[in-house]
Length: 525
Image (cartoon, rainbow, N blue to C red; front, side, top):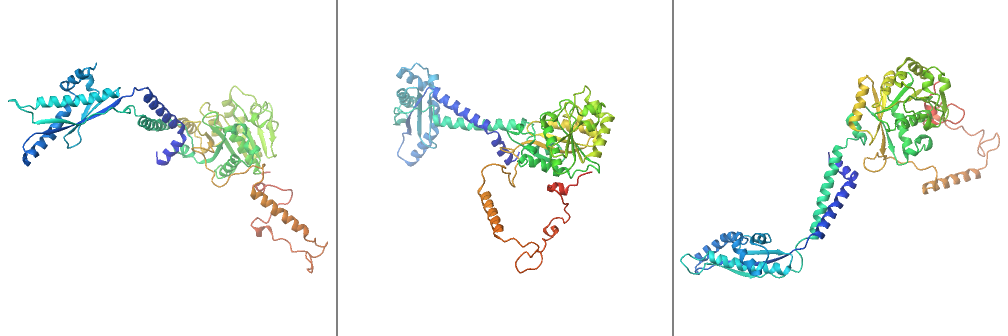
């Protein structure tokens, strides 16, 4: 994973990280509130060596003191030092338990020893620290006394007596909260990374490209209200999702499908990836471009084309295949007249056998003769083999991949199912890609605006310019019938330049107004 991948991960899994950080703060706060506060008091002693006044003796004594300080630090928590403290203060602890609350340290290269004692009572903590310092001086004096008698050359003097602390040393609320936050954030990030590594769902075009080398023919966005508007091309032709289907239509023109009518077998790995709505919207966009299109619902197990398009579904493909009606009786026109629909009909007990039999091949041959494009909606690949059988008959299939729905191994299994029967994968359509949030598909050029709503400032300016132009035309006197276009000129006004001079083909068929796609895409007779 690169740095950008981690940033996207943090943005996508921010809820997990925030919950972990909050949990760390809560646990740290609860620990700080439930822990009994303890107080710390410190006394400081100085270790010196008695000797002569010569420089050599003073240097030797100083070196001896620094070396001995380390031994005296270890001596502070010994029973010989702490037993007198327990007896003097009348403590309920023994020397071993008291040693857990007493510690000693020394600044580097000094003859000073700090004796620190902690207790739930601030007064008792100060008394223990002072009593321990006195007991240490007494024990060291005994240990350093020469065997033959005399005074000890080592003297320990208290230079700073412990005072009663005014605030608790533990728990440190700020420190605990900071540690809880840091630990919570670290755990949250770790959990997010692990979940990302274990999550094999395909969520973007890049994930799909890692699995297959087939071209990505289209990327269809997904919004929260997408289930309520399945036929987006028909309901909102200027929506971003509708433009995605037009881009898919354009990319399909570059597929090598031979000279016959183009046949698109649409399938997916699992149910719920949007293959049916993709098939319907694709058929609508092809019909809007002026082509004669037929949409065939070949999902004979869970047909849904008739329900989405609001047509009769009892008579359809199965009725034609078993010979009850002809194909001309099963075809239902829809939309602008360029799109015909063949519903699935009644659900048969043997869908795979029907789709692989000779009547289905004959039906496809007839449809190729009557239409420019055939869009066939088929069942998913993993549950059944219907799509693979039909795709083999037409020479290829288009796989719809639902982002966030299918896992990597499921897509690999679906591709293997096509490869096993020798089906060519024409391309992939990545569906349900979010338009907002992490992993969203970016539309950087422009966004469509709604057809209705309050006019924008640019729209109001355009309206004003249009009205001014109309007023100017009304103020210009009309030319006399059969006369010159302007006073003093002879003959009619010069004709406008040919269309070809303005960058368009000169031969434009006359007749009723037609769309641009109707002009550039010839309709098959």
